Image 1: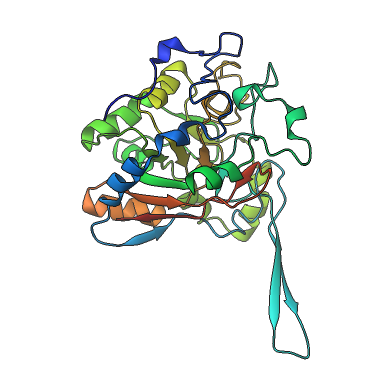
Image 2 (image 1 turned 45 degrees about the horizontal axis):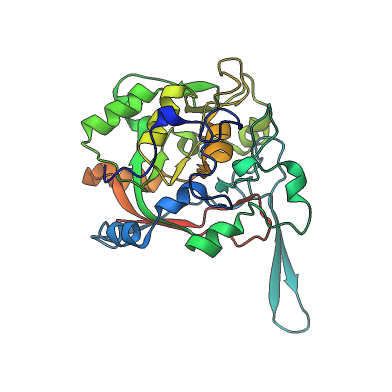
Length: 324
């Protein structure tokens, strides 16, 4: 890893009056972009050197996938607006920004005990007209999430090692597995990298019938496969100085986040979003990218992800492309 830019994990919380693990104040009293501060002109220029072939991979699912969204979120709606007698069409869409490929912004999930969001903001700070922690700050201050992406293909590694865990039920992607993948593939992280973890959700969902997709939100047993929420996992994320982290899982971490297997004060959503200002990406389509990376035995790439400029926004579609 390049020069360390963050304080030691054991110094957290930085604000002693705040909840566990917070890094409030690290980037100044009025910061709204958190770990995206690690994306600098220097890291972007260095990331551009990852482009060797000019081969591009779109990382967003279609907006109508999943066809029956999880967590009770609304389905994608699309209407063609014809203007007869002219041969002219417009269209209109109606979406929940978290029903498909998404970045969770810092208004999305707070510390559940103290009801605080990143930089100690509370729900009252998000009244209509307030721009505090709106996801559009990412676009205004950094243009987007643009830098060096790194893929850890846990799903392929698990299959090779005889590990069979369904992405449709609660289960843990263990930190030791990720460390093994890093070692076996001689992956070196750099400060400001954007991490992607493939757990196989998109692959399995794409094989479901229409009826199975309709029944998916009510499946039993429920839950989701994702990174185990432990202090060790959080230490690893912090010490590798990622600017953003994402997965093809709808929850990134093992879900439900409030399950009995988790310490209620040690969830990735709380520490990353509300504590550090670390964007969490979910339901990214990593299938074609993973295939290309396996063929080349190369796991880093240039990433450009441009969240929508939604004033006061909570989340955004990914609008992401990886370039090898």
